[in-house]
Image 1: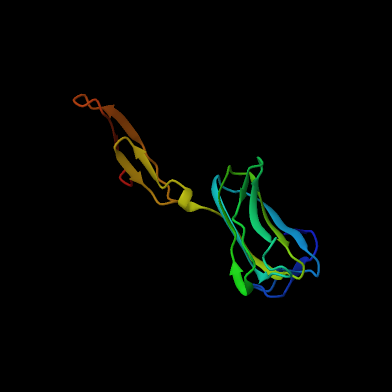
Image 2: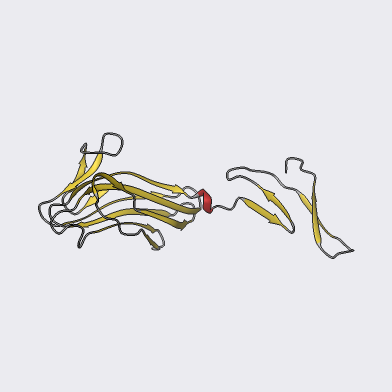
Length: 178
């Protein structure tokens, strides 16, 4: 992780899980980012989230802006809804989804925190993953459907014919595993 700006650093204070987290506090206004760039191993739609908890300083949540972005190597930006600090151990989870990339593309995952002086909190437990719900799980061939679960593989050898009585193409296969 790369932290830019001031008032935040990696510590052992208040992690959600494990022993380390990014903790922030400043007696002046906060404006910092926490980011990481990863390379997609598979093409598809990715989703990601990160947890944050803490308290707002002077002025409460007024003027506060906390959001997550994912920027792909072609410059496309995906942004979460803004979240607010709701108190100690009241974890909120800004989320991005539908981040469409090809295998080998990069995704820069950034949490941007703008908060009033005296704000404090912890950032922990991020995740960026291939959104399997966005991956097609079936293949339609004319009026017949081959359904497969994500990650399954099958070899399909087929012959197409046109039914002379109906004019509708059909297929046959000798692969009994299908």
